[in-house]
Image 1 (cartoon, rainbow, N blue to C red):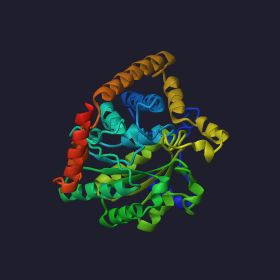
Image 2 (cartoon, helix red, strand yellow):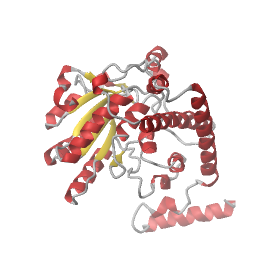
Image 3 (tube, one colour):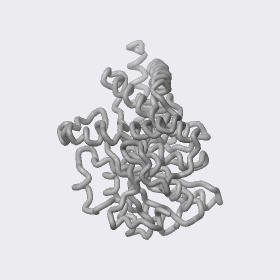
Image 4 (spheres, rainbow, N blue to C red):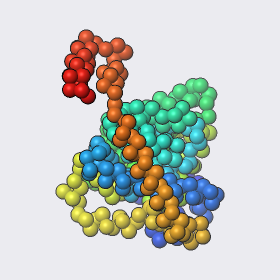
Length: 361
């Protein structure tokens, strides 16, 4: 419905629910059970709680650099909710909502941001690739997953996430071209949060929309209100179903906003005004979804307070567990660079090991 009837060159954006939680396009409303609605909302709210507490831990010197997801929860959860458990996610480093919806344990997530790479060793049933910091390289990984699934005759779709800045990387274009030529079961989600660190989207690309970049590769491209959970779910579900049928990949531009810093090492006040952020706070994806659920009688202030308290305590307890036992063993720093440690690495390892032994560490 959406992919056939909307032209990315016309600067059209799909929206089903406005910022007040009102359904403005009831004919586009996807079929979602009350149970699924609550699961999506709780995951978004949980993501926000994790972000808020993790920022506190980092400022206290108890956590390494962290990439907040504030404001992008609907983009992540709405798209991930369209996948099956057997489908794959190839993330960058700002997909907390998608990780949670796909079942990634919070302990793993905290381990990674605590500096322990073993945090990205997900349970076998959680089909989420490790965090990819090199910009847009995960797009290539996703095409590999999709190619392998088709080669093996598996009913699997691979979804990749990238930021608006990542669309200027060669990997992005190579992945779209390869997936298009091979008609692979891929869905590419661009989280257009308006900034590539401090570089504004308008000087990142001359394209009127990011969605229109799909046309160069002969695949559908569509722009969606990334703060609208229903629009994200409905469009992504159509793209996933299309990929699963063997009709090829889709590019989805999720138009949203990064309300926090790029990472905890970034100071966004240097390149944007607080008034700009406030405009987007008014479009908060969690607030509009909560208004909708309350209007349907599925949620209320009492449930909100109880859930926030329970999840907040869980985050605190999980982080404290990681903080006590999550340090990376010294040997892990050297064991996974090459299949066998080179003489230089072995010498470095023995020297560091002797140093720590002498210091009693």
